[in-house]
Image 1 (cartoon, one colour):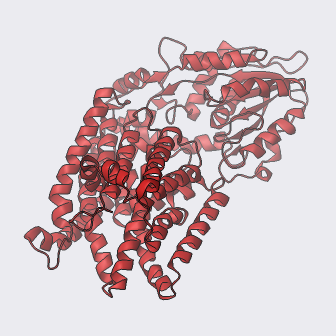
Image 2: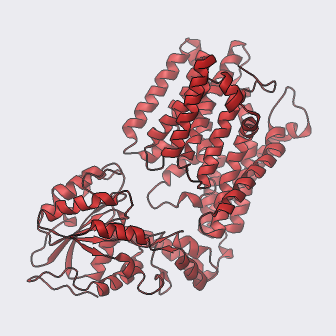
Image 3: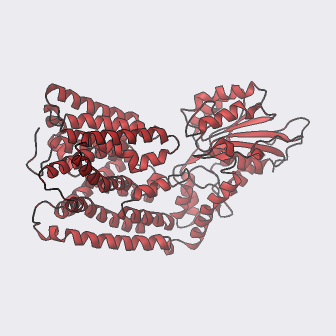
Length: 632
C-alpha cells in the first residue's frame, strides 16, 4: 500500500472522496446520467467509519488516545469551514431570498450550528415541504449524521476494544442498522434517509475493515477495485429518488467496501489514487460545503432550470470557491502538528467559536423576525401570507386525514362519510393521489348537485395493485376491491400522472368498467417550473409575477396525449383546457393565487378552475332519471 508522507494519506481513499463528491456535484447540477449521484454521501459515511476507527485503534494501541483530543481534532477539521459557509450562505440568503425562505434558511442555520440539521430536514420532509432546491443548507444533513456518529462511536469502540470484540460489535451494530432500515423504510422512509441510526451500517462497513486491518492487493485486489468502481458507477446511473434509501445505500456501501478492501492494489494506486483525483479528494469537504448554496441561491434568482452553460459555470464556481475555502480556512485552521505553529493555527479555535456565536445570533434573529419583511412590497407580502394560509384551507377542503391519506395513514381511519351513496343523486367516486384530492375539492364546487365520494392518498395513483408509499397498496386494494362495487354512477380517475405509470391505466379502467361503472379520466394538469408562491415572493409586483409564472407553465402535451390514449373507452377530460382557457394560464383571481406550489390548487384555484371546468363539460355527470347537475 502506498502512503503519502503527509498525514499518513492513502491516495486511493482520497480518490474515493473525489469520486463521491463529483457524483454529488454532478447530481445537483442535473447532469444527465447522474440521477444517483446523491449516493456519494453514502461513500463518505463508509470512508469516515474506516478512517475514524483505524485512527482510534492505532492511537489506543500506543496508549495515546484521548477523547478530548479526538473531539478537538474533529472540531478543527469540520467546524471552521462549516461556520464560514453558513455565515456566507446567510448573507447571500438575506440578499436574495424573500422573507419566508430567508426565515427557513435561518432556522436551518441554527440547526446546522447545533449539528442536528438532519432532524430538522426530517421533520420538514412532508409532502408539501418546500422543494429541495429552495433550501441552501439542506446538504448539511449529512454532516449532522457524521457528527452524531463521532459522539457515540469512540466511546463504544474503546469499550469493545477492552473486551476484544471490536469486529463482532461492528458486525452486530451494522446488521441491526440494516434490519431496522429494511423493516421501517416503507413506513418511515424519510427517517431512514435522514437519521443516523439507519446509517450506522455504512459507518460499520468501513469500521470492520479497519478493525480487521484487511487489505487485498495483487490481481485479486485489482479485480475488486474495478468491481467497486463499476458497482458505484452503475448505482449512480440507475438509482434515483424513487428507489428505497436502503437500496441505494446498500449498493453504495457495497461498492465502498470493495474499494476500501483493495485500497493498496496496483490498480487502486494508479487509477483511483491518481494525482488529479487525490487533489480533488483533498478538497472534497470544501467542494461539498460550497456547491449546494451556490446552486440554490443562483436558481432562486433565475427562477428556472439550469442551462448547459450555467451548469458549467456553477461547477467551476464550486471548485474555485472550494479552493479558496480549503486554502484560507481548512488548512490553516486544521491542527496539523504539535505544538501549533502560525497565527492562524493558534487563533483557529477562538475564531471558530466567534463565528459560530455570530452565526447563531444572526440566524436566530432572522428566524424569530420572519426574515427581512421590509424588503418586500406590502401587497406582495400580504398575498404571499394569504397563499401560505391556503395550505391549511386546502387540507380542510380536501378532507386530509379523513378521506385523503398520507404517510402512516391506516385504512381504518377513513370516515364512513367519505364514500357513501345517496339515493336520487348522481353518485361519483373520486380516486387518485393529492391531485385527485384537488379534483375532489374542485368538482364539489363545480357540480354542487352531485354527491361526490372520495378515496385519495398522497403519492398514491389510482392504479390497481400499485404500491408507491406505505399503505398505497392497501388503499388501492380497497378502492378497486370494495369501493368500486358500490352503486356509483361514475368513478373519476385523477392523478399527478407520470409517464411510467400511464401504461397501467387502461387495465385499471377496464377493471372498473367490468363492474358496470362509467369512468371519467381527468388528464394531466399544468405544471409550473417553480413554486408559484416563491415566484410571487420574488416579484416586485403582481404584473411581473403573473408574467413570470405564466412563462414557466408546462402544459405537458405529450403526457396529456399519452393518458388520453390509455383512457380510450372512458371519458377523457382535458384539465389544461380549464386551467388555460385562453392563450395563457390563469394564475390570479382577485389578487389570490390559484396554486399553492408548482401544480396543486388553492381553494380559490379550485373555485375558479372549477367554474371553467363545468363550463367546458356541463353534462359530464348527467344521468337520466336522477337529479340534474347544475354546473356553475
